[in-house]
Length: 79
Image 1: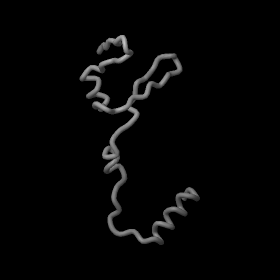
Image 2 (image 1 turned 45 degrees about the vertical axis):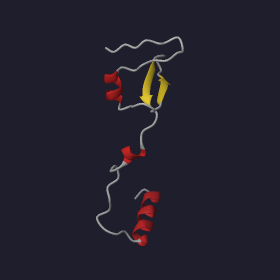
Image 3 (image 1 turned 30 degrees about the horizontal axis):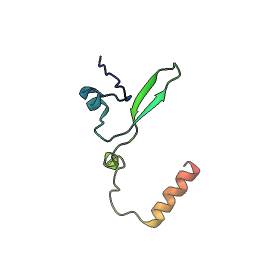
Image 4 (image 1 turned 180 degrees about the vertical axis):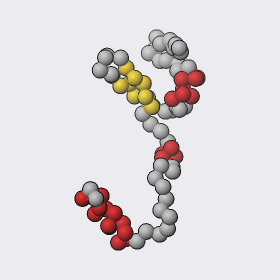
């Protein structure tokens, strides 16, 4: 269990291991989310745009405008 102390200015130093586990560093923002039971969850509010790299696979080759239109149409109709 990790414990932190609140200063007279309302500031908290998050223990190193907790920061590493959450993947946050200096300058990152945190959200405080109130749960149904009244407790709060602390979650990272922002990540670098670089963290999105690679989540969408690249096409295996060039994609024509016709192929793009067909994919958009299929997605819109749920096919």
